[in-house]
Length: 330
Image (tube, rainbow, N blue to C red; front, top):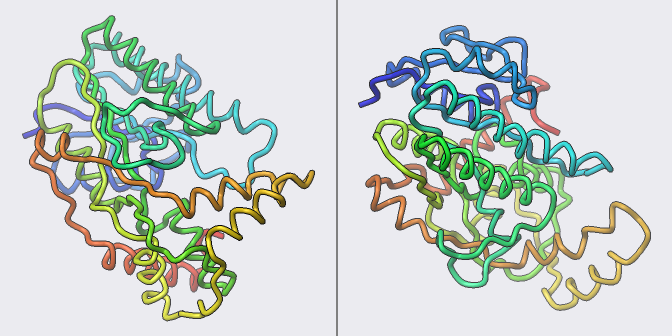
């Protein structure tokens, strides 16, 4: 049972908004913060704060004993020259600011939302929390450095730290890779590469928020790191699940994996910014992406509740509804 106030950072974001919803649904005392001027909800105390500005964080921590730090930057599909610095400022420096301010304010427990991307762009076998990290790209590097900064700060202060390395999130309002795939399928721009037999790890946003809640409910000490994911599924299951929900199956043409890799390698050498990452994108599509979650499941008795088919249908239903209202993500 949660006995004290919880602060949720990034409370208007894709995951943060769901954490707030579950917090309120459980009748828990909480506060929300974000960079936006107002909250998406009127039924929670909301204080605006920019986590990259350390002086703005202190006021929102008064009376708080647990921080669920969800705020972060992700899903920049067309990176520019400033992307790396944006990731560093928000994900790394922002996390360090929150951890430092929380420690100084006497917060007992910091829950840091991280990503399995810290291990690298794909797995070779099943990765657990002891697998060495090998972040590739500005986003993954910023998340890994955020972990390191938080660990350093909490070691010195004695504040408990729980790092949740979440698998790829999806669900209603998804701004990420699954949502991007859904829109590609809907617009008839999808082309099969490979046979879809490779395994991927996904996590429905409602289950991700539940993971945050079960950690917040239990007093802990020290530094703990956990992978959190639903059971792995094949790429074929993901595509078919989205296509079924959309009512679209126009996928008769397939490009075998080997020619696709060869062609993408050559195209990536063309001096064109849009082509530069093509080979890595194809490699990631064809690769395995699987994580061992037993440590978290055994520590908290946690099991995901939303199956892939149901979660994908919820995402598509939200997309269709908001498409009609002119609010669906592009």
